[in-house]
Amino acid sequence: LKRSKETIYELEKSQVPGEKFRTTGELNSAIFHLEDSSEKVRAPAHRIEHNLHPFVAYFIMPVFAFANAGITVGGDFINSLIHPVTLGILAGLFLGKQIGIFIFSWIACKIRLASLPENISWRQMYGIGLIGGIGFTMSLFIAALAFGESDLIINAKAGILLASLFSGVAGYLMLRMKKKKVI
Figure (spheres, rainbow, N blue to C red):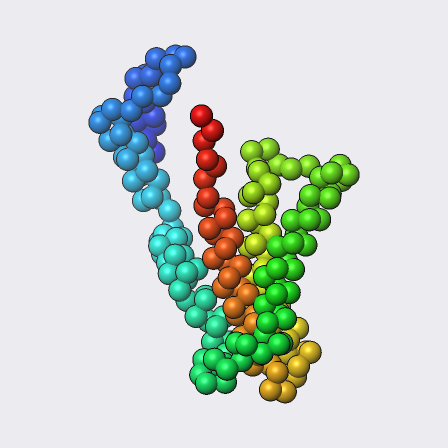
């Protein structure tokens, strides 16, 4: 703690008031020292949790969700991709969610029930609407209630899986798009 306080004091001393913070090799070294010192005082369990988070969030949880969904990818699954139930659920989740979220957000802003957050564009709001189509868990639950043990449950699961995949990819791409600069 004493060494960190001394490092902070040196950082404060090195800056000229009113000027933008400039970093040099020595300042970067001090900043890395502070970061290292703060890392050392964190509980080991917290460090482990922090280091495992990417693996859990991007691999283990999706595999767990997919396995618990009871989806078997085989001949029946492939054949079900063109079934009307599959296409209906795909359209409902992928198109319906994005249109509903975007349109009702727009209406709420127009009638001044809500306002668009600062630095957020309507393009980004549309991207959020696209992301809303990722309805994996609740959609599977509702499909199980609606179709029970019938053969249509395979078609419903295929539609839900495809809609979630399309929504996630399309939403990601929409939110990553940069505005074109007008010269």
